[in-house]
Length: 355
Image (cartoon, rainbow, N blue to C red):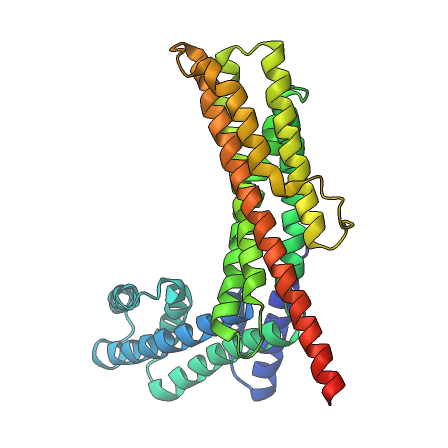
């Protein structure tokens, strides 16, 4: 586990909450620290959404806790029944993520000594609000996440691992333990990348007026993710079907060469998006589909009437085509994005000249 921004933010939020409670004389301040821990989220939007949801369910939980105290006292049975009711209401409101902190609020309030319940409840509830507010403030001000940089860095890391695995999948050069270890890491990293994209898309949709995000760039990121997913699916199909077909040396060379071509095209597309490739040096990435179609025409006639295990190679060929298709789409989307970006730059320069 690395010491990332979220870890640092959690520590800062807890520290801030404890200091504020100490300054205001609110006890026990530990509830503020607990609230800060539960409220910290990986994005500004999620932190704000979590805070508003927590506020609603915590107010409701506090009211139910006070009613329970007033009518039934603070015996263990009453506390247990109130907790069940609060959980049921939270689930009914589809606010499952707020249950933990709401239950902390209920327990904090229902541990009242039996006198001045309202003042005691207000004190406890105030500490929890301070914790929630501290977490939201820290998440907005301290090290605000750069989703684009985080996404591209992770995407590059995932691609490098995918590239190694696909390039050695047919040649079988890696040891079985190394291959399986890297493959397991690839699957986990793709899930993390999916979560990063989801966060990025949420920010664009929910707070675009505050922090504008280029919608066309979001489409590029989505297609980058789709291409990586199809690359990983190709690995799955090679593992399941290719070697069970008992391929010949020639078949190994043909399939390996085609996969190498697609990986190189994938790499050049990423470099193209980052503006690191000279014009005319893209290895004809616009013909990805055409070249893959030639590859399929080469292998399909040989196996389409063959009912033996060799038909497994057709399945692998189909997966290769799917991967190539997504790369072709990525190429088109990147080109379209860059054309519009250049037009926007020209329009901006024109407006400046007119002024």
